[in-house]
Image (cartoon, rainbow, N blue to C red; front, top):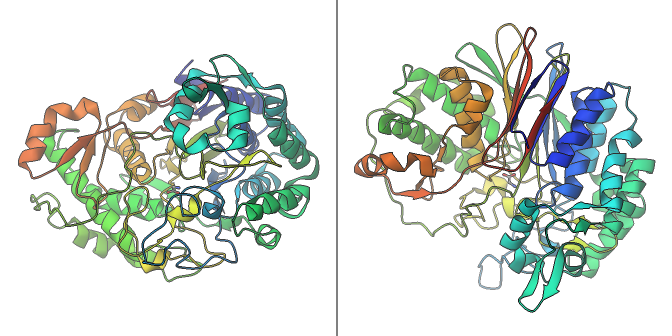
Length: 545
Ligand code: GLY
C-alpha cells in the first residue's frame, strides 16, 4: 500500500485503499475532482465504517481550476424537537450514555452527507459521469462485500464495548466467541445487505430517496422506535449549504478554508497570522518553537470556546476575529514565555489516542481542480447504533453542541452558549478542509485530517511544514505534531518529540503522548503534476495517474 504517489492525470489520497481505487477509476473515466470525491465519500461509507458515512455530515471545499472556490456545508442539523437541555438529567448533569449525547438514537443529528454529495456533483461535477456511476461502486462493495482488513478489526475492537450491543453491528461485523463478541476474522467477506439496499435506492433515485422517500421513512421510524427525536419532517427540511470559504494570506500564499459552522478555519487563520508575525520562527520542533506555536494554539482555542457557533443562528464576529490588529494583539507576548496556567477544570471526558472518529480525503484532477473533504459520524462509529432497516450507522454529532456551558464534550472542549442546541442549528465543528494556493495559482498543499479538535492543529502543522519550512507534501504530512487546545492545560506530543519533554516541563507545560491525526493531502503544479500523500500514521492509500 502506497502512502505517496505522483502523476500527471490526477490523484487521490484517502484513509482506505478500496475507496482510493474507486476515486482514481472515476478520474480515469474522465471525471473531475468533485466526481471522484463523491464516489470516494460513498465508498468510504461502506469500507471505512468508523467515520465514512451516509449517516453523518461534513464539509467539502472545492477550488475550480479557474480559481473559483466554494465550501459545501453538509454538517448535521439538530432535529426540530431538540432542546437546549435535552441531555441534562433532573440534577442538571450531562447524560452521555444510552439516551444521552454520545450513545444511541437520541444522539443523532439530521445527516447531511447525501445532500452534500448530490449538491457537489450537480453544481460542480464534470457532467461526464452520472450520479449512478458514482454511487454504484459503493453499492457493489456493500452487496458483494470486501475482505475484512486488520485495520477495521482493530478499530472495531477499540469500540467493541459500545457497538457489541447493537444487533446489526453483531450481524455484519462481529462473531460471537467464548470470549464474547469479537471482530470477524481477517479476510472474512463483510457484506452489508441493508446498506446495499439503501445505497441502491440512492443510486437510482438520488438524494430525494434519503430525505423524502423510502429511506427517509425507514430511517426516521427506526430512530423514533428507539427513543430518538429525528423525524421525516427534519429529513425533508435538510439542505446542504454553499458557503464562501474563508480566505487568508500566509507567507505569500492564499489559504482557503472552512467558515462557520466550522471553528477550524477561523482558528487556523488566527494561528497562521500570529505565527507569520513571529517570522523568523525558531527551528522546527525546538522547545522554543513548540512553545510559540502552542501559545498561538491556546489563544485560538480560547476564542473558539468563547465566540463560535453556527453563524446562521448566532452572531459570530468572524471579521473581528480575523482582523489584522486583533491578531497583532493576540500575537503580543507569544514569544515572551507566557506563564502556563493550570485551570481548575473538570478533566476531559475521554481524550482518545485514536484519530479515527472523523475522516478526510483529498482529490486533485488533471486540470488542477481540487477537493478537500472532511466528514464524520463524530465519535468512532458515531452513536454506536445502526438503523436496522437501512443499514446506516448513525452519527452522534449532537455531542458537538454545548450540552451544558462549562462542561467539556467528548473531546474535552469547553464551549459557550453560542453553540447551545437549537432546532435546525448546526453544531460547531473542528473539521478544517483547507487548500493553500501560491501566487501562480498552483496548489501548494490541499489538506485536512480527522481527530476532533486536534484536526485544526494537524492542518496547521502540515501548512507550516509545507509553506514556512518549504518541505515536500509527504514530509509535511509525516512531520511530528503536537496539540494544545487551551483547556485542559495539557500539551499533547507525538512520541517522536519525547526528547524535548524536559525542556517543555521547565517552561511549565504538562505534557502527554499520543498520535495525532490522519492527514490526506496533495499538491499540484502545472509542470510537475500531482503529488499525493496519505499519512504514514494511518492505513490509507495515495494513488495518482
Ligand atoms: N465531530 C467532530 C467535529 O466536527 O469537530
